[in-house]
Amino acid sequence: MKLRKILLAAVVLTALLLAAGCGKKAEQPPVAQPITAPVTNPSINIEPLIAEWLASDHSNIQLYPAGRDTCVTCHDGGAFAGKLTQQDQLHREFNVALDCRACHSGYGLEIQKSGVVNLPNQQNFKAGKGALCLSCHNERGVPNINDARRASPHGGSQGGIFSGSGGIRTDGFSYISSPHTGIGDTCIACHMTKTPEGLPSHTFRVDSAEDSCSKCHSGLTDVNRKALGDYDGDGTAKGFQDEVKGLLKILEAAIVEALEGGSFATGGGQVQFKDAKGELIAPADISNEIYQAGYNHVLVKYDGSYGIHNPHYVVQLLQQSYKALTGKDVPGATLK
Ligand code: HEC
Ligand code: HEC
Ligand code: HEC
Ligand code: HEC
Ligand code: HEC
Image 1 (cartoon, rainbow, N blue to C red):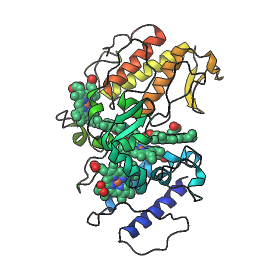
Image 2 (image 1 turned 60 degrees about the horizontal axis):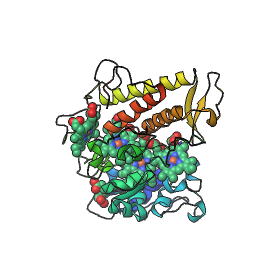
Image 3 (image 1 turned 60 degrees about the vertical axis):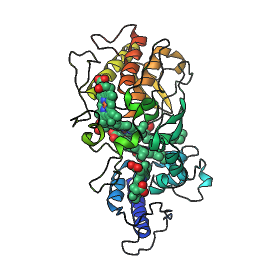
Image 4 (image 1 turned 90 degrees about the vertical axis):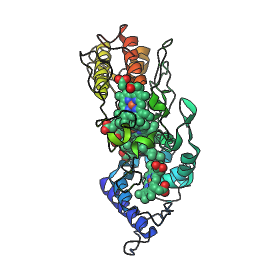
């Protein structure tokens, strides 16, 4: 997979340099797929952006999902741009990374401009240019506490967390999203801040807290902003991400206790629960409260921001899961 990544990256790089009219003319390797180079402005030096993209996970190909029908649409850049869902629609024998064409042509460009995306749990979510990111980065499924399979959220569950529409909720409790949900252009605002050259960063990571956060949280230099409360009840209000990590630990311990020493993990699209001997427990023998806690634990972990995408909602989701499972509030915690 690593070798394949390097090979394809080199191919893309060559094709791009050719398209940009710089670099030596090289013969395209046999697997080359012409990049319908969407980045057309000749006055922009795109080399720094190419280097950033190469170092990002979007230049990687996960061959297993990229090689399967339905999965291919998010795991192959050309399939995404063409809105294709079947292997035989690709008319090629190989997969391509989430390269420039994925976001700068076809469907990628269309959804970026439309600013509206359908999420599994919320239709017509207004996300500005971030609608592009959310069309792939979501949990891919509507959870149901009675689900017989005990299905798991998909990796990259930012859609459900950011919009506050994901997760298994406790009936009768009022969940609230944080003001972050309303940030213009959503994902792009924090994950594509300006490079020193004044172009949108293509690392796709949060390069600096100052650039992403300080227009609202003046002087913030660390994304792990000090929390306004002690959400995990350990006696101190730490960094917000640390509070969420603390809550995840407390919830995991409660699940392990409910399983009498067992464990849980994801596999085969399910949240799989095991007993103390390591034997898989049949989904039908898992209570709804254990499933709710396990599903929400995975959802928050797969989101990867440890609460920053929707601070209020994430604390509520974890604290309520704990309460549903144990019958009591997280001891000593500031409750949201
Ligand atoms: C709606 C878009 C979308 C579809 C469709 C999709 N995926 Fe993914 N998948 C993603 C995203 C986004 C990530 C990246 C998560 C991250 O690293 O933050 C991902 C990550 C993964 C991973 C690695 C992370 C993990 O969950 O362990 C695997 C394996 C995977 N997908 C398999 C599949 C399979 C198999 C299918 C088809 C049944 C599929 N995907 C369909 C968007 C999608
Ligand atoms: C995952 C999606 C994604 C990928 C992949 C991607 N870009 Fe972009 N790119 C964007 C978005 C979104 C913007 C607009 C950001 C903004 O308006 O702040 C952008 C903006 C740009 C710009 C600024 C000028 C313009 O055309 O809007 C350039 C240049 C650019 N990208 C080049 C590239 C190159 C070269 C590649 C391939 C190496 C690439 N991009 C891959 C999402 C992507
Ligand atoms: C075509 C689908 C698609 C689009 C569009 C897309 N991504 Fe991704 N993204 C993925 C997949 C798949 C992965 C995982 C790749 C891998 O690990 O092989 C990923 C990985 C990432 C990662 C690294 C995840 C980690 O856990 O380290 C970040 C950050 C990210 N994407 C942000 C964004 C942002 C921001 C946008 C919008 C500008 C965006 N993505 C648009 C599919 C997409
Ligand atoms: C308020 C700023 C902000 C917005 C808006 C935002 N993110 Fe994030 N995101 C973060 C921070 C902060 C992290 C944690 C990074 C860290 O701990 O280093 C993160 C983490 C992630 C990760 C995990 C990978 C990593 O870099 O560790 C992915 C993937 C991601 N965000 C995608 C998205 C998507 C998709 C959207 C659009 C719904 C989005 N983000 C909106 C700030 C933001
Ligand atoms: C558009 C303005 C805006 C941006 C940009 C923004 N925030 Fe916020 N954030 C808010 C508001 C408003 C609140 C709610 C009031 C408060 O907590 O001060 C909030 C709440 C929070 C909270 C919850 C604190 C708690 O204990 O309840 C955290 C943590 C946080 N933001 C971190 C960040 C980080 C990290 C970034 C950058 C990656 C960021 N914010 C970017 C406006 C913003």
